[in-house]
Image (tube, rainbow, N blue to C red; front, side, top):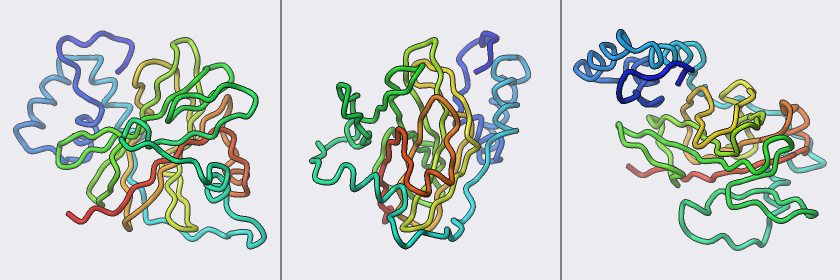
Amino acid sequence: MSGAACIGEPVSWLRLERLALAELDAATAATVRAHLDACAACAGAFARIAEDARPLPRLPAVTVDATAPPWWARWRVAIGGIALAAGAAVALVALRPATVAPPPPGGVRVKGAGVVVVRLVRERAGVIAFDPDDVREDDRWKVELTCAPGGAAWVDVAVVQGREVAFPLAPQEVACGNAVAVPGAFRITDGAAEVCVALGPRAADREKLRGGARGGVVCRRLTASGT
């Protein structure tokens, strides 16, 4: 939310985003709007969402260098053979620097921010799930970061499907805290995908990412939901 204090129970980011997209039923929308009329903190958050929330368009074709795998394929090679424990808490995988102790699952080390842990949030028909395994076209997605207050990290989100990649959100610097929502939400079309989050002390160069540079990246593989 904004710097002002909420007058009561804060409205969640995902509910505010659904209001911006006219996805709430009439009674719920009226309740939320009444709260916004009285609460400067939530009204400020809603204004931000109205400006930066954007749906993910159908993925464009990407020119791929035939002499080398794309950056996300190289990332998979870098962790090839690692056995992943079951469960959502360990399903996100991090690139691990060779010279330091490995960060926790779903985390990378970022200069000036320390260990940054990523969590993928899905809203489906009003139900929130953290680090889920499947995707439908009507789902809405957000990314949350957790890192020590006082630091900050630049974040870029990519959605990968085969050899195609799209960037649904603008690169942005996010101040550290507990479960901080990266501004903006997106949808994923065309079935199974991998959501990858690049983290660093400065904005990532997307062309370098496509060419193989990978800094700190965590990815979540999503299968197409049958329902």
